[in-house]
Image (cartoon, rainbow, N blue to C red; front, side, top):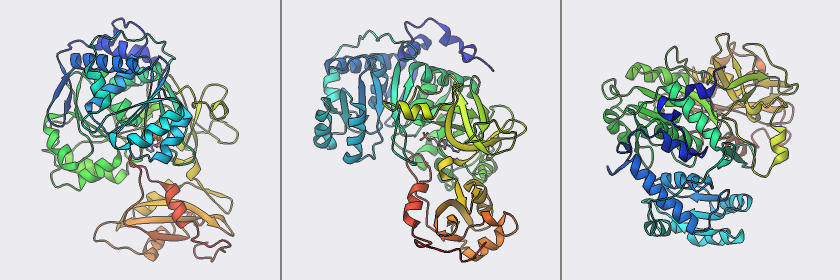
Amino acid sequence: MTETSAQLPLSAQSEAASANLFDRLVATIADGTRTAIVAEDGARFTYDDLVRFSGRLANALVASHVKPGDRVAVQVEKSVPALVLYLATIRAGAVYLPLNTAYTLTELAYFIDDAEPALVICDPAKLEGVGDLASRVGAGTLTMDADGDGTMMALCDQQSNDFQTVGRAGSDLAAILYTSGTTGRSKGAMLSHDNLMSNALTLIETWRFTPDDVLIHALPIYHTHGLFVASNVTLFSGASMIFLPKFDADEVLARMPSATTLMGVPTFYVRLLQHAGLTAASTARMRLFVSGSAPLLAETHRAWKARTGHAILERYGMTETNMNTSNPYDGERLPGSVGFPLPGISLRVTDSESGEILPTNEIGMIEVRGPNVFHGYWRMPEKTASEFRPDGFFITGDLGKCDARGYVFIVGRGKDLVITGGFNVYPKEVEDEIDAVPGVFESAVIGLPHGDLGEAVTAVVVCAAGSPVDERAILDALDGRLARFKLPKRILFADDLPRNAMGKVQKNVLREIHQGLYGPYAEDRGRNP
Ligand code: AMP
């Protein structure tokens, strides 16, 4: 197993003043006059600008009574100042706590009560409600709008550029990110300075980032993908990023001639493929397309390769662990696979019940261990203990397998597994077969309550534009391709699948919508026994 420290780029090997992520970032800056960020309007921020700007913001945090170890909760629109606020929080030795901009006041109440931040920074439009919630836990409130303006910036403007970064140990907390909670109550994943640092350096090496790279950053920054993977990888490699407020296919295509890399969720690639402007010529300067946060359909991978000549590099990670696996930079980027464990990270597939390690190609629980793995769930010691094995492996909750070459495949979340008549059905296997039926664009397979079977395999299908296909045609196509117990009892149709902002299909929403489909005492009508 490769040690992550052996992967340090030369520039990162200079002595950092402490294990604080920011000190280590400063130690990597070879030329502070180089551009770090280009905003949508063309405004440029050099690395020196980031150091000064984060100094002012860190002074503003201290002036707002933020002390080392305090949580700073942030629910603001994406902007360059919002990203610098993340750096400033780290600099001040505090713990950055980003919150999805879609959360309502009712949802925010849970996060604020749970995390007990010292300061909450929100959009001016939400000040009244958020102010009430913050005062319940004794927190102050400042505002920041989509341009970065507000009371936070007014305070920042009065501060000095100079700020002595607060020394931190590698195991001290840098951030708490709440899990998206699609399968239960949202939990605060505690990430240390070392967790973030090790993953950034590992990805830089694996994906060959250099100061010459220009990343198109179109992801939200309240999530691990846009905040840590995209931003930390860019900044720690001395590269630059074009910072877009959101994904827009026209805008992203227009930027490709001046960029080298794109990191996206699968939806980005699906939408770009629908754009006539996506060609080998328009992507000629790009060297790398990375996909993650949700499964990339093998079909999307192939279509992308056919149109552009580029093989999308798919990787797998989660809030709790940063990134765990990646397809190779050189070598085969296998459609449908998330590649190999990253250097320094161990991955195994086990029997969920016994914890025994399973042989090649058998589906089981994915477990990971490495410097990337979080320190536990905030104020949930029992939940934390139950999700780690005694030898330190974290039980991810994802089901998957490894093939003989070591490629890892994810078949879905454990909680999405369908148990029908006592048999386990892995949704991905059924979805892959349905997706291969002509006229189908995509599908989601769920288990719904069923009187006889416990759960009935049920598919929700989105048809390709202009190619209607009906339930009977799909069931006929599946006949003989899957064991009978895996065949959907019903196939439902939808215009699209419900997804969260990271492109993940919300199967909990589908289950809720269709829960009564088979009736409270539904019997197996023998449709597809
Ligand atoms: P989050 O914590 O929001 O980043 O969600 C993490 C979850 O997203 C993982 O546990 C997986 O279930 C899923 N995920 C992330 N990347 C992939 C991928 N490349 N393929 C399939 N599922 C993925």
